[in-house]
Each structure stands twice: as structure tokens, then as C-alpha cells.
Length: 374
Image 1 (cartoon, helix red, strand yellow):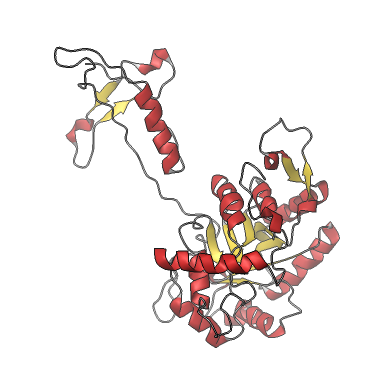
Image 2: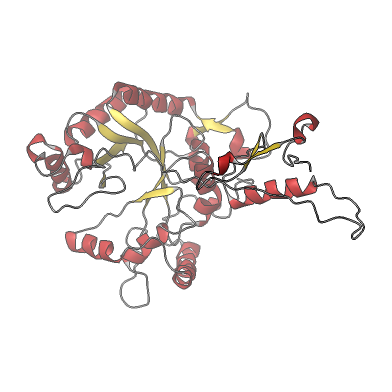
């Protein structure tokens, strides 16, 4: 019998493969030495490999059949589970708190835009990060992110100085270049032609210089990760390709989801970029005013953690107005909604998105974009 490689395109390597039985060791399986191994990222790519192999099968006539079914095709799938290094590598894997509880996946995530606008919150963050608090909370048990809208080197340096003042003084976990807009992108005239217009876009030189400047802080140990925030999903998709950008901070909620799911999320998955979802309650408007059936805060947050968005979503920001609101949301949060609830609240969100009476959606023209037509 002959063993052929149905995924090989070379005549010299397609035939004559050898089967190795691995000595019959417990738990081991026979393997085919030299068979092609193709890396796929999803089920569609796996099915494409199967289809290519089936097209290359050779059948022949036997006494029983015009096309013999006595040849067999075997495709083995090896599934590897990996975790992002963005939130899962907090240095607290072996540290228990006073109650014996252990953080399993990353650390408490604290993010702020302007430290001077929220004095009480920032006072608490600064206290948590101070050496005096080391007996109860270690700095490595926290993920502190801040940033600014500035792009010049001098202003960025000042923003980092402000952030370090509130995060322990040694390092910041993530510095976010905030509110990157489409005007900060430029056409790459040197790039080969591509039918997808987004593939011909790149950061404008001023934005590229800002990203490079913040990236140097990573090399210097002042910052661990470089992030960008944007309200534009075209920007998100373009910057997902940038190797110096570690994470994307993107608007995503029940009434602002289509462009994220069609444009930004696929680009983030393809390039291995984690996403921080913010404005998940649309400025606390999605929950309604109590006069009609509306989702709870926990429903809004749970939607963002559903299977259409995770991956790449790894963190969901919630600007709770007080401790009671935070506790209520945390008690009801789930990793996604069930099918009926997801469909119900998606329809609910689309009504709000259609009206856009609060002008939440700054780029409504992006709503119906597809990745290949942006």
C-alpha cells in the first residue's frame, strides 16, 4: 500500500510516506513521517485544508466499484490553546491573598484618562500602589493603564510622568494613545496595490512617531504595553497590524457592534491583538429609565464577553458611579448571554443605534462596513 500526502503540492514529496507506530507506547498514536502540517486559525481554514486534500485523492476501478472506496483519507487536527500575554501574565500566579483566594487570570484592571478629573478615584489608585500598602496589595497584583491625547514627545513625557505619580512611580502597565481618529491615518503610497482599501492605510508620520516614542518606554522598563484607543473601527483594523501596538481599546456595546464584529475584531484576531472594550453601557443609557424592559448593567457587560467578541476582547471597562453599582454588575456578570437573551438585546440595541439621538456614534458611516469594503 502507498501512503500519499494529499496536502503536498510537490510531486517529489507527495508519495512514499512512512508510518511510524512509536513503539506502541501508552497514550501514543501512530504518525506519518513527513506529512504536511498546516497552521489554521479557525474552522473555515481547517475545512479548506480538508477540501484541498479531497480534491487530490486518487480513485481507481475494482471488480466491485467503478471508483474504489478502498482508499482512505485521514486528516488529524491538533488543537492548541494559547493565552494572550496582555492580561494573563500578571506576576501574581503564585500569590494568595489574605483569604486564600488566588487570581487565576491576570489582575484587577484600573484605567483612567485624566487623573485630575477624578481625585477620589485617583487617590485610591495611588494609595493601592504605594509601598505602605504592600502588606495587603502588591503592585504586580494590579494592572494600571493611563494615557493621553498628546502626540508630541514633550507632551507624552509629561503624561507619562503624571501616570507614574499615581501608579507607584516605577512603571505603568499600559500607556494608551487616546482617541486616534481616521485623520491620523495616511495612504501608504509604496505599498503594493490591494483590493482592500484598509490594507493600503498606515499611521500618519506624526502618529507613527508617537507610537515609536511610547515604544521606547517599553524598552526602558517604564511601560509594559503600548495601547491605542479609538472610536473608529477602520482605525482599529489598521492599527491592529502595527507590530509596535500591543492592544486596542475599542467602543463596543449592544447598540454599537456591527463594525466591531465585521472590521476590528477580525483584524485583531488575525494579528493577535487583545481588545479592551469600553463604553459598554453607552454612557449608562442602555439600561433605560425603569419605565420599559431594558438590559441590566450586568447584561450589557455580559454581552461584550460573548463568543462573537471573545477573542479578541480580554477586558471590559465599566465606569461604575458608586460601589453599590459596581457590586451589582459584578454579581450578575456572565461570560456571554444565552442565545435568546443575545438576540433580544441585539434587537433592542439596534433601535437605539438607528436613532443615534445622543450622537454616541461618531462614525455612523462605518456601521455597515465589511472588512473587504471599508
